[in-house]
Image (spheres, one colour):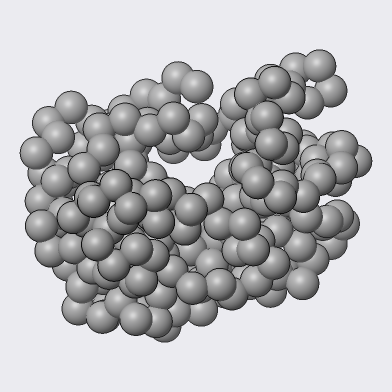
Length: 248
């Protein structure tokens, strides 16, 4: 259970599912896998299986206990829509999110095709956001699947950004996060790639959040782009909505 997250674009994390398997280039240096293996080595019961896909029954009631509204990154240590997660468990996670509508849930997946398949069976209240990761141009097809999901807000995580996304189409997308890779073996994100995405967001009137430059020493490199911070969030979070305000 985590009541606070250091990730810049959220405020808490909740992991009813942990573990995943690689699907694309962005998975090569997965931070969650490294962390899960460290936690296993430290003897943490929840990570006894390391980074194997594992639903956690006991975690389902965690956000119910959080009385103060929070912005929650859901499954930061795995992928809720991994093929090994039973449909029924996903439905139960969504039921919890629907019932605890004081919170905003940010669900990020590299498997939007499964989201689309299950969408008719899932509730889609305003407090459940769905995003997908697009790290290179060969992953752009994920956006078309995401676009068809009937979520109140669909977002993109372009992290780690590993190449230019000149053909990025933001139709139906309500928020974009960009970030460089961090940790051992981190691959470079070129400034022009990030600037190009920022400008596409500007043209499409989509909020743009620049998370980090990344690298082995990500704190030293910071998160300024072209001399300024970009911490834009969707208006649904602060305007015309009972959901909690978010201050980056």
